[in-house]
Length: 252
Image (cartoon, rainbow, N blue to C red; front, side, top):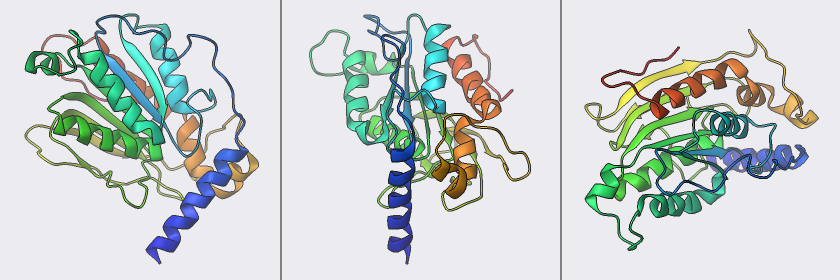
């Protein structure tokens, strides 16, 4: 039964994503040429089979806003969730300042990495953080929005290399997010919270969505276009882009 349910979710995600219009971002809008020594590496993941250039989706819009304003000396990029390995290689290459192919302890220590994503992209965030943990690379923040794991993935335990983690979810529909994340090592990772959004009680209007999304996965769809939710994610990201000495980041 579990495998059948997972298969239905995979098929549904494919159908919904295929029906969503693709929009190509303007040149340099997302993932512009990174600075030689980025102050911070900000990586986002889109869900389903969405293209990383689709401006109707929350992670893409967030990356664009960050890059336009406070992240002039940061590297900001959005990836499809299936391109997690590419994201990992990109991060390693950015951290390898002397380009010798090996990350030194100093290069790892200098890492300031922020990861966020929606749906399958949120699950990809945890998997990427876990891969970075195995390499000894720290992560400042992971932010999951309506996180949905593929059948072979585990997105609920945050690895100990992550300094802070936050989870936003909605509980309704065939596709809905993980309700709780926990830290593998609470003394090293602060879980800022598991925050529920109920779109049956407080619906939000989405633009550029398909009729399949509106009929079959309305709440999951709204978690991706909810400006209030993504503003909270953005606030947490910006706090870490320009941290104040000794300050503790909290939700707005």
